[in-house]
Length: 184
Image (cartoon, rainbow, N blue to C red; front, side):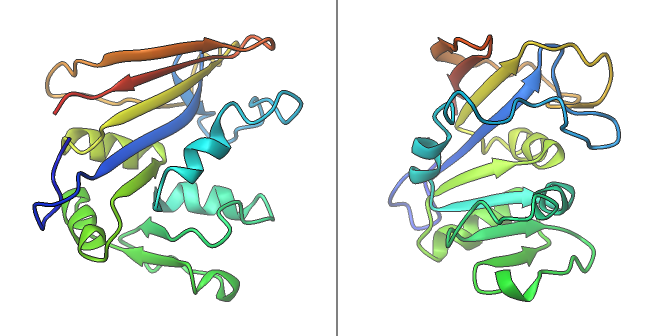
């Protein structure tokens, strides 16, 4: 795993996301109405969230999460990557901030602040962190639906990215979750 800027603890950039069987994280308009809602537990999300220090997401994902009403990250620090003046609601100002920097610079800034384990969320954000060689773990839950089109989890890669399979868990409702390590 990559070392932080002080040469000490390892940092982790992890992904926990659902996709359609054909690899889309949302419809072309950003809608996620096809995702299952409740009923079968949290698919390990609670344990995952307990393992991270900070959430890093893109602007579009931030805006989508804001549309849910209740803020799901409690007091966990959240960084929104945006090149525009994305507005942070006053109720979230104590835990949410905006940064405009390349992935490696964002991680270096946060590790200097003592944060070492990051939840990376949002398609373009995940793609950027993967391209920068920063993703260390992928947890992808496949939902048994074909969308045919939409926003892909993975975009163009300049080279193959080998993954090491850790485990796969099938759920009674047909969802299948796979965890992978991303070799450094």
